[in-house]
Length: 408
Image (cartoon, rainbow, N blue to C red; front, side, top):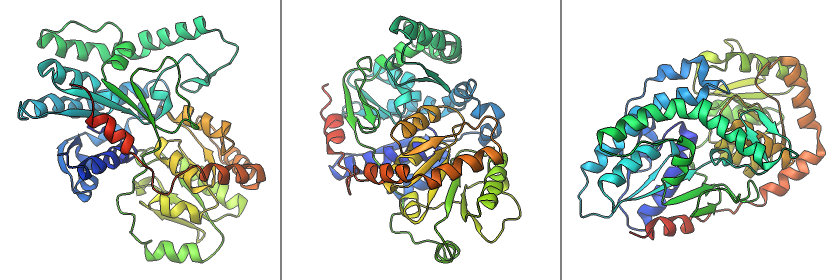
């Protein structure tokens, strides 16, 4: 079960295809918007409608309120999991590989069928809370000198004030209907549900922490491209051939509130006299009139595009971050919410880019930050070194074996 944007789906598809190649039957559940990608991969899909109006909710990209919006928007999709599992042949062994937001529903499935095993994927390090450094709580970077007791207190406050009020009412209502005991603390419960946790990012990006759940398997980025052989559109090919390497700007495929972001991007591009590609499937947020040196594209495979570019300015989604690291180009990360702050901090710590918070973003600030990124030789050297850490064909056999061999 995949939940979220294309960046959340693609790693699941990479694993699903590898499991199918080993002879296993695969069904993918998720929001209806995922259907084209799943069918293109040749997998069975069971979709649930999601009201796309949530993408226009201004709280979606709020550092504090964004989680509540996402949780509410995904309950319908996650709620389809128990219904799907109830219809499966009882005699058939089944492993559920689910997004962390669907763990309560996966737990309900296992309560009804104790033979089922549950695994979850953590696509970004911030989805695994820890008291150890580096510690980001939303946009807040907790200093290294803060003692462990204070860090544990801080996480308790996050859980009790921000997560429990959102998660527990609905979770406990469904549990009561099935005669199950209530959950008291959402964070601890969610971390204890899986029989196996998969950290789908390499240790050099985020090392395993002592307080992460066990058993946990640390893997590489399972990068996936829906159509790796797809060629550039004629307009894009002509644009790339017409001048110097451009800068890519994207606030993420799921962001429909990026009009101000692209206005700042356009002004920064003009001030720096750089060429640029604006990447978003939501054309309405792109300035209506673009100069010849700026091209809008709804979608381009980053694995093919980024090696042709000078830098990328992006939101800090884990999929975009990983593709930028693999391409070896410098990054300017402009985080809005969710895991983006932690990913941005890690990019900066690795010397692969810089961070500019989206709050209070202006053309002047964006221009200054982008100028520093484009002119830094140290960044260029570090980016090339990090790119060399990516294998040409990432091996996820260890992930597949761990899923297949989960003890019953």
